[in-house]
Image (cartoon, rainbow, N blue to C red; front, top):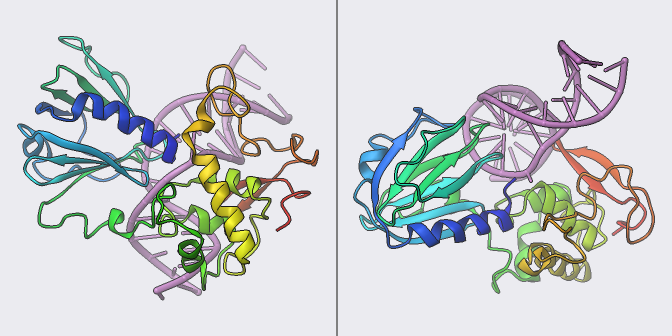
Length: 267
DNA sequence: CCCACGACCTGCTGGC
DNA sequence: TGCCAGCAGGTCGTGG
């Protein structure tokens, strides 16, 4: 489920109960997620205070008083839930990690597919290595402008869709929001990323900001009454494009589904 | 270096 | 009704 807007929501939830709080107990209910937990993972967390709970792309970053950084990723199916029971129920299915915080909160990481990850980035390393180091700009930051996007796309042999999903180009878009941004910008996901006019880059940039914008998540034009997103094209194969009335198509690019409207996404 | 592809896991759906 | 192929919002390693 998690792309940038979802991860950002998780960050806010975790920040409320973890920032300024200490890890009193850390339970690992299995030895690994996708990869084994780091050596002495629980021991290195215990007693540490969370100084800040940040996000970079789809990564959650807990800065610890030791100077180490707890780097977490939700993968495809990861989620956190927070409880305040004195003695919370023992873990349900796929509850893999439980943090008991000095704030009284119990933070449980659940991940059926186990594509999520938790690692510790030592103080000395300061995220200079590993996946976070290679991330492109934050799409909602001022520094991410048309020139930056153009530079990232220059020389790329891939399609626009692949470029937008590439975390080195821009951090936080995934399969849904890449497709949605391209629909918004009226661009064909199959067209080559390197051959973008200034005009198209500007349009794409605006589209990226729009689809990731928190304002989009209020009930209204783009959300249903439950607050769930109603995407313009994602998972809507065969449905009618609300802009031009064309029929939304599903194709496969780089092994992933891409949804788009062939009638109006022609750029 | 770049890119496409398969692997990693479990669960749910849709078509038979 | 029940079964199973196919698919799922991410990343990483491999091989070309």
